[in-house]
Length: 289
Image (cartoon, rainbow, N blue to C red):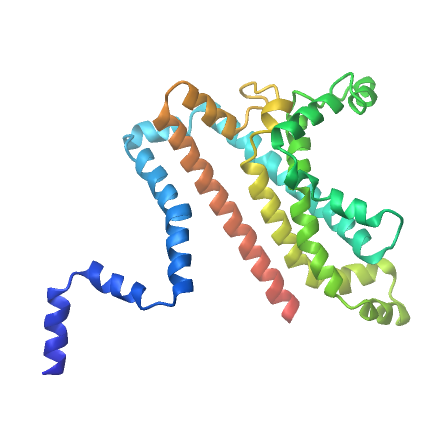
């Protein structure tokens, strides 16, 4: 009888009510988390996909794979990945110096790393465009060598490196602080060189953390707009990035086209981040062996 009563109750109650009852029974921390993520993350993403779905599949494919769109994907994702990789190397080096060495004005240097977090991106773009222009402090030194930075794709890469550097440094730094230096000294006492100690002792447990910093920096670089739009010439098929293309579509009141580019941008970013996370999981599994 109890089983039949429960079945009758489930038939009478709609699925949504049962689901709502389960949510209500959750702790208040869970309820706040679910509501916050729903309104701030999931709902906007669903709305974007629904807006893009208003276009017929053929039109969606035409917009997403146009020559201009493909060129902007290339500039955006390839440059972002290269910038994240550069920061993966030099960000780890900076974190190493800040953790393992004491030197004058160390706290000032440490605080300076966070400057891209606090500085408005438009100000950063204006500063970089001025410094790396042909008459700037750095650009004037590179110009005789035939290297032009401002208003080129190289300038876009410099801006992406600048705004994504803190993610690698601040991700790697705490892990380095927790690593015991005695392990390195033990390796040296057994005759290992500094390079062998770094590659065999330090790098394996640090590698997943470096990948995390690279993933965060890559995500930040892909969505960057304020600094890149100033330091780049925004010329199609040269240094035009996808966020700027989306803004240009919006200026033309092509809301569907802008949404289609945004959906493709989101999809490619999720795939690349998934690949990085899988590589990160593999690195942790390899380290635990």
